[in-house]
Image (cartoon, rainbow, N blue to C red; front, side):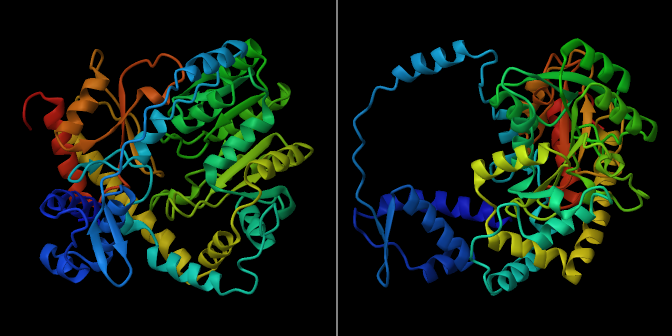
Length: 477
């Protein structure tokens, strides 16, 4: 059982047991709870911390944990005025800046205990380099000056490391260290387009990017993707029709389709954007999630751009831990100063201990071992999930099996109810990501996205597909 699930289950159990104790009554000691429930001391400590946070328990150093006095409910307030104020603001905007985080929360929210996590957006704990991260953080914390204020642009050594990964076009001076890829995308869109402006996006695309665009008051305009990536003919037409000055794309292992931009389309994309006087925001999130045996990867678009068309986004988060929120923005020309200004205003800087830990990690022998291990594991899990789907759910169309990334994109049969399937799957014990949030306009059909990285291993993948098949219905296989 995952530590997270154990904590939740123990906390729920202790809540029920609280009724046995009077207010102020002492709970069993941590040692007793460890022995009674057969969990670790860390689990007990975290479960009690949850109850303290909820106001159900108080702890006294050296004395133990006690049932808390029930807190009096605060008098209800009247927040109805906010509806008028927020509506008035929206009416004055060209594009309302409504924030819909539902598509993002699907991949962030932990499913209930016992539910298989096919909707996750990060590596399972067994795939994360936890020991290497702990060692890196410990070494980083002991470095002289590790807790002092870092340069606003990021540590020079980390900027240099990120720059080397983009080819020979960007140098350390062209790189900003950011708090992960999501923060980098937010800064890029705010810097490149004013509120009310159109921004061209792949269709389907990453829901988090659509949420960023809409929160900034931008108008996402879809440009369809096929198995070779973004379609240049439709991109050119979209630029002409909208006058957009920004296109956001994921040329490598696109989310959610897994497509890789075809070689002939790379130069075409840059040419079309250059002629339109537009920027290309390259979200290179999956470069370090390549599967074993995939062959040589294409270079980032930024490596082929001499004219400052590409604003490059990268991150360490996806291949390490959701809590190692260290990413980068790379750009050349006057736009870099605008990116820098917005980055500084929004975040000041990325905490130095986190940057130092990232440097320690990528400079250690454990780093290359971790990348090889993840590459092999992702391929194994991808193959196991694809095989299980073909066996148990042949009605679901799997048009492309990617050579990188951590998910498969499935099209439902015409007329299938996507929402009903997602709900039925959860009741059957498997959480899947619905396809609708990946489209900024009407989708051509129902879809679901299944992650194979957030589960414990191939056996759990097979069981998850069995549960999904039960939810889908049809003849048993």
